[in-house]
Amino acid sequence: MSPEPTLAAARRPLEGSRAVAETVARCRPQVVPAYPISPQTHIVEGVGALVRGGELEHCEFVTVESEFGAMSVCIGASAAGARTYTATSSQGLLFMAEALYNASGLGLPIVMTVANRALGAPINIWNDQSDSLSQRDSGWIQLYARDSQAACDLHPIAFRLAEELSVPVMVCMDGFVLTHAVEPLDVPGQEVVDGFLPPYAPCQVLDPAAPLSIGAMVGPEAFTEVRYLAHHRMETAVQRFPELARRYAKLVGRPAEDLARGYRLEDARTVVVAMGSVLGTLEDVVDEARGRGLAVGAVELTCFRPFPAGKLRELLVDAEHVVVLERALSVGSGGILTAELAAAGVGAHARITTVIAGLGGRPVTAKALRKLIADATARRLPPMEFLDLDHDLLRRVHARENGR
Image (cartoon, rainbow, N blue to C red; front, side, top):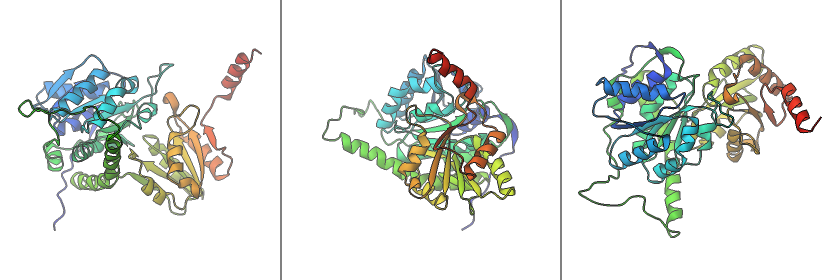
């Protein structure tokens, strides 16, 4: 059998948001409800411009009055049989929360970009991953992009995965760091996406000619089964995502996305696990550490929901110390990703350390990561650490609170 043809596009300088907008347009959404909120606004503006300019045909771009309205329109459009897309960030995602559960509970294959941004109060418009991780139990698949190229590549896969399994999908990309950065990117041509993503064939459709109800009340006699089936579809996604990613990678001529992937894990005793754009800096620092003879590596987690426990156990099987770089904080508990790894059984054979980093847009610098790796390999890290914490500021605050 001959290999599938490669139809990669030429690289050109693009803002991350614009590249995502163009890629989404190649996926031929039919309804795009939109409400602006930084830092995702450029994405829906880009899609809107493509609709207005005629490049994205047969698409209804709906300007709504809130993020809750955007997801509500998504639910109606998807239930009526339209391929549906939207984007949001931060407080906007929280405003959608009730509707997020409705979308997943109804099995509607909506795709949404989340431009990750901190949650208030106090208000903060900069990047961390608190917003999407706060909705980790909403029944949406969650994919995290390491860079803008990955964000582009994940969207066609997200539409295909959502529509095959009747599950909504979030594609998460770090706000400003990726959404507003300009770099050379490949946006797939229309023939590439058409060859990968077939026309939408919904599993359920509201049709006046054949009336039926969806989302009716379910009592105790069947609700557990409903939730079981939702969980089963998520488990199916763990198997299906890598295969779809490999198919897409052959078309665009790039390495395939995966649930998780290791970096320089050969003989690594200390491994840092992270999601999102920090991976680029982290891998550079790992290279430097390897040059100094330190046995360190990294693991990139792309798929947070469903959580690929088996894949991570495989990648971390030889690690003696797992350092989890968290871009969000579960207040009163600690690291969100750390808890998932421990539940997956990683802690049975390795020491796990939580490092809270980059909250509210604080840069995670190479200098800070160098010190982190040095402390980790020397076993100087406590079980939970806040990277670059301003201890002088905290002492002043504690003194004031204690009345001194």
